[in-house]
Structure formats: C-alpha cells, structure tokens
Length: 192
Image 1: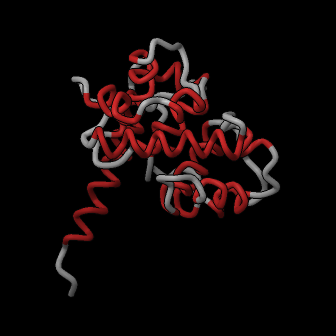
Image 2: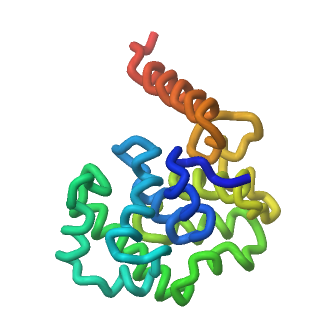
C-alpha cells in the first residue's frame, strides 16, 4: 500500500521510493503538523533540483546554504536553522555508518531491538521517535524482524491509532489526531 503520510500525492510518492526521505520526514515530525513534516522531504529534493534525496550531498552541503533552503518560504520546518542542522547531521551519520544507503540500517537486523537501537543511535532520534519509526517500518514497509512490535512499544500494537505509523488515509489521520488530543487533555487534567 502506498504511503499517505503527507496527504500530498507527489510528496508521498517520494516517501514511497526513497527511504532517506521517509527517515528525514520522521526526523522533522516535531512541533509541526505531521503532513508538513512528511511533505518537507519532497520540497527539499525539489529545492535541491533532485528527484530523490542523497545523504552524501546533504551531508556535504554548505551549512548556511542548507539553512537558507530550509528557511525559504514555505519553510520546511518551524525551526529551519535547527532542523537543517539536524538533517545534515543525520545524513552525515547515514553516510558514515551505512555508506549513504539508509535501507542498510534494517536490511540485516536480527531482531526488533537491534533495529530500534540503530535508530536511537542516529542524530535526532530518541527512544520515542525510534519506536514510532520501528512501528512505521513494520506496519507499512514490511520490515518485520522478530520482536519488532515489542521494540516499537505501544506504537507497534495492531489496530491502534497512536502515531504516523497508523496513518494510511485521511480517516486514520483523524483518528490519530483524536488520540493525541485525548492524551494531551489527560496529561493536563488535574490529578485526583
């Protein structure tokens, strides 16, 4: 099934064919709407004049020029300087550890915990983001090493609507938003 994370056909097509774009979209998925975060890799590729993203190119890009690309209206993120730096650091790690091919991160993993550990080791990926991306790979990309659901934590549960891993259409996106809003309301509620 094709990805529907950005709710934009062209951006989702890039996410489908370019694992680095998907990894970058997940990195950008903070403090902006999910659709914007997963739209941004396609816009980045367009601004670079490419049909897909190249980790070595981004890692070696002039940092100030990359910030300018991120900041150009419509900005790729609410915090263009910080996120340009994080994307560049992420791409440098992909080049160093996986010869620029992020799919090598999961190609030979023996189990879900190893997959999650490799993700946590990437710049900009903490435990929660690594769990969500593990769930996304398992639920929508067919990357299902033994124990992947356990490694993804609650995000790996079948039939839930907790994160981007569960978004397959506008209806599931609405359900994920409802779940997140309910969790925020519960966190703000006075403790009795």
